[in-house]
Length: 141
Image (cartoon, rainbow, N blue to C red; front, top):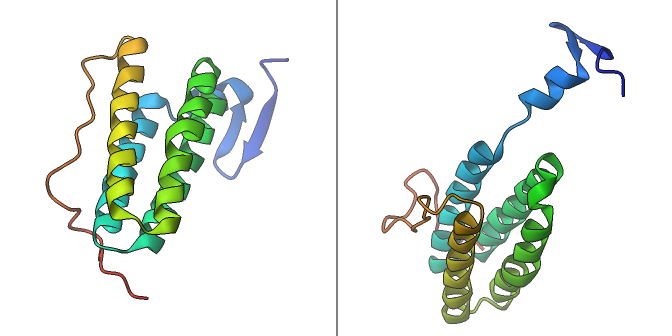
């Protein structure tokens, strides 16, 4: 592909290479996923299953973006989605807190295992002991 190909925006012209470099890396995406995972947990704990499902959906969407932008992680991201996030979704739909909590914890363990696998073992996700303060977690059904 011609690296000189550019597109016009209202701010000027950008090459495809510049656009590719401007895409978020895993660090930015993982921060957002961690934030969503935090809300997901406390929404489910509060019985706001609709918010929990929303946060799970957004988490999966961000991971799809990550697998596109960083294809070397695609297989493990897809595996994680299938083996953990989809199971969390099942527990959300069944509104089973106890099973949800167990599945959620397995997801944290697996995420930290992937950090190890890719040389980022010093990054260990830990769920905050405090619910997010910027969300109304109560169910409004």
